[in-house]
Length: 113
Image 1 (cartoon, rainbow, N blue to C red):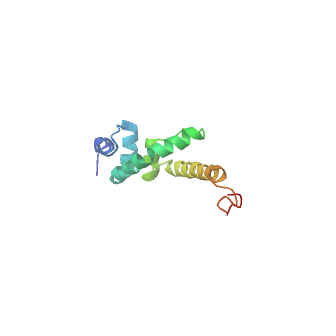
Image 2: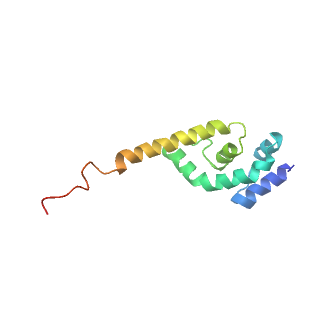
Image 3: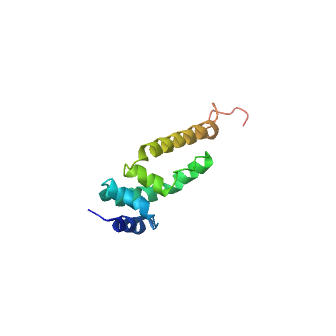
């Protein structure tokens, strides 16, 4: 079993980010401290995209490093953060597919060449 300090150290070691004592205590209190390092690895990998999507769609609350770590470790509130993240990613894919695609016949033969 890890202590609050060890959970905080895992965040520093893996993600290069310090976390508050309250957040570290959530891992310990919910007996999920063994998931901390993996959760911080996931948070480090996804933080940039999640933060960008949150800002893009005006959903900045919990769309950050701690929010992703909370979701990855299944801490309280993590499920709703995951739903929000997936919803924003879906919006982004939908927006891209509408504007980023090419029209019908774009690669057809041209007779005026």
